[in-house]
Image 1 (cartoon, rainbow, N blue to C red):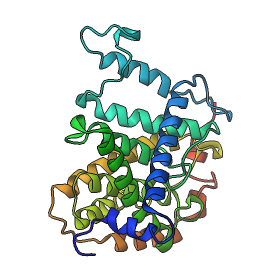
Image 2: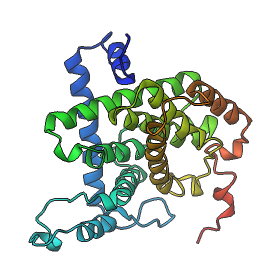
Image 3: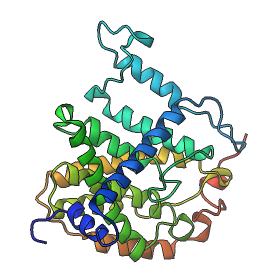
Image 4: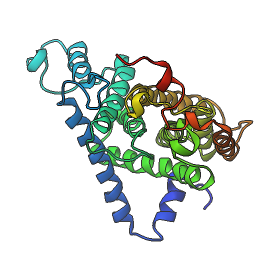
Length: 292
């Protein structure tokens, strides 16, 4: 196993029950469902169901991004050639858009990929979108290269997700939102560090950094709906994952706190957390925000 990355180790594990082609096609299918989720969400307008009257933002944000990134001479709709242009100056806006789109789709009962949960479903798609469109060298990548990125990203993210599920929890009802959004951010950070050439130590460091700065995150949805603060929280956590990966990659992989230690800490923090902050809508924003 010497010299293998986190994704390679996870692939070996997966081969115990399925072929390499089944693994690859399965992961690419998961990504295609994530992409379709975003596209579906961008076509939905109006207010999210549930009574909070939360307005969908993704469609309007998408139209604004298309205008902001239009190139001189484009002649398509809104002055464009019909293609999305990924200006690196707007990487944060694109990441926010994807995270919001996926979570708005979840909030309206649409089809999402649990990654690792529905309430945190927008983080991994948003960070993987960043990897495919804004990571160094991706502007020259072939279709096969892009597929390789998807596969390695999801394998590494999945490996970290297994650790959270086995050693702690990914349930907001059990450990608060640190178990949902925190785990997803940690998984996404690992995936991004992996595809950006990180060593196993750097990938572990990225995952650890992301969770370390989500410790204690409460689950206090207003009205018991996965809308406020959940939708925006996915965008914020995606940015944390990207920053965590970049910080890890600028280091040599050495770090004071291990991923195992931060996972155990998350579990213990969840045990100590009051039940009113664990998806019961009995504390925090859920009771301190006056509904209109």
